[in-house]
Image 1 (cartoon, rainbow, N blue to C red):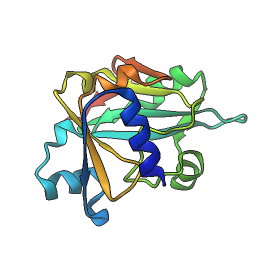
Image 2 (image 1 turned 135 degrees about the horizontal axis):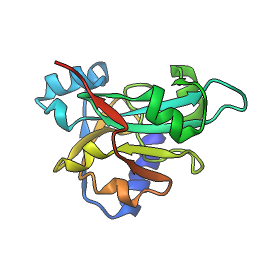
Image 3 (image 1 turned 45 degrees about the vertical axis):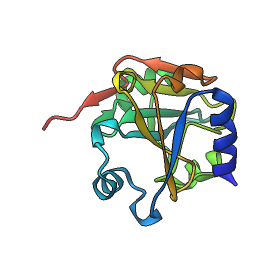
Length: 162
């Protein structure tokens, strides 16, 4: 069901995309990229975050798989919260209808803010979740500019020291 909603949203955004079937056992980003020969630098992870205090505030962040979401500074400021953490798998499923490994920014609740790291915008295309662990979406990052509730954020994620 969620994949159908995602395809409807994508079709309405008017950006070409490819829906790539994958083995659900390889849905997690690093293993998916390795199995299917995709560059990790072009993979985007959608991460649901939540404030610690009630009433809880949620947001969806999209960052390159080769970076680390700056939860303690950037996300905290964006949500206007004193403490922020990653939403649990159960919270993510309840909020989005999607399982970890398939979470995508397409077909999220309309009131959920979406924050996209500006480093993703430099890619020719990105690989994103499809709402399901059975497929991925290959799409130009320009799509983020067409999403309602989406904000491109400089330095939302930090480069990982290698």
